[in-house]
Length: 152
Image 1 (tube, one colour):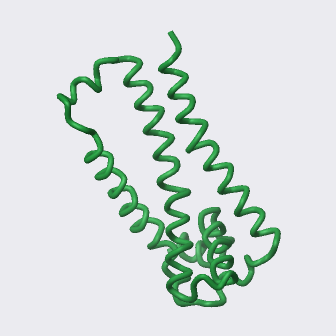
Image 2 (cartoon, rainbow, N blue to C red):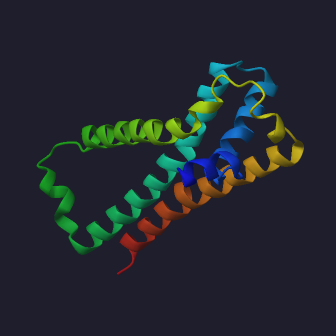
Image 3 (cartoon, rainbow, N blue to C red):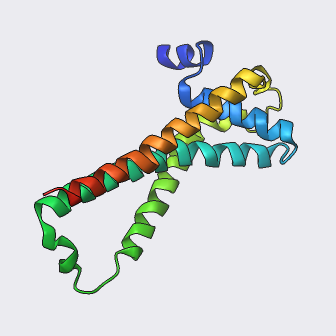
């Protein structure tokens, strides 16, 4: 009960702040009102805080596994791993929607929830957060995995 009360009274966490910044931007741009803006902001939060770190972890894990055991891909017996990757990706999106969406559901029908996050500074912070996470998880980690495989 104490943590629930603290969560309601305290400052929102980094995921919630990023969500509110993107919700404010979606509402301001006029690309969506109400539930459409909420869904757009939620999808971006799931992509940034669930899928991107997963890409980084998968690429590093794949690099380590292939470095330690090079014949791992040949053991797939000619089958494409695409089906498994699609299943894992869909599962991550579903888990992200359940986990993150549950925490952010209270903002779905509140049109004033993001008003405190609709400044130029907030848009700049959200831009840099997205750029840094994308650069680290989507570029740097896979590149490290490739370089690890290429090294002797």
